Image (cartoon, rainbow, N blue to C red; front, side, top):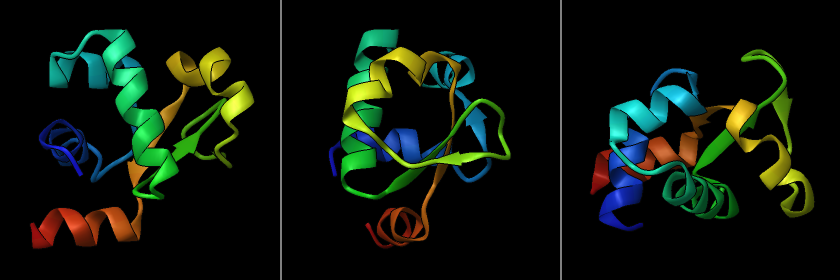
Length: 85
């Protein structure tokens, strides 16, 4: 996990929208998309779409189309790694 990914996990103890993550992390939307993709591939976060209550399994092919309308939450594994670093 990179320092940037660690900082994103700081914000994902509660379900958080993409737009809120852009504001809270100060990352550009493009950089945030790249980092969220990496965290999803590592199973450190979960994604929700079209609302914060509907978990959506990560699919590489559709991720770019919906990422900016999605919500995110740290997974149990993500929280464990975040808290033991």
